[in-house]
Image 1 (cartoon, one colour):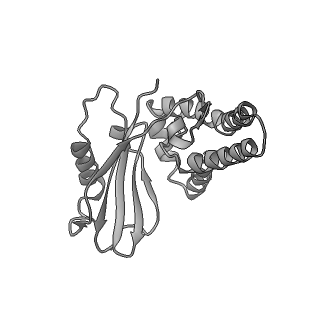
Image 2 (tube, helix red, strand yellow):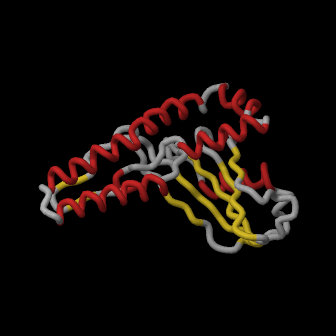
Length: 203
């Protein structure tokens, strides 16, 4: 069973100033193989957060988050006001999908551990598996055998996600090596940034 990474985030109300008006992902060694982010939510509000892994349950989320803020945004958010409480939650993921249905029950999205192991994102998988489950339910309601309908749902989810999940295992391993530093240098070029954005969108 894979260790669940954690996410913690907070919204800040502030004048954007020199903060970027675009999504930013920061690959910080203390968060490896995960990342931190800044997402604008309007002209005077941003969402800043981190995703990290705590295999030995030794890390304090608030301390780690504050260290991330101090390192990357200390001067730029000095005049900011926290707009709400900290929010955090574990992410459930896997590399190989297990059973997604049993008699009278079908699971979708993160309930079925369909969260991307490399990015800890699950909205795409949740929506896509939800549509596949709806199709299976419609088939069962129209007379198709439940086992066949939901067996097809499970097979479709594995076909859709499994290859990407297995590739994420390689990505996570690479992020724990000196390749992370090489990667950081390479992505400084505009062409590399555009390519990376496209790859992460595909994942």
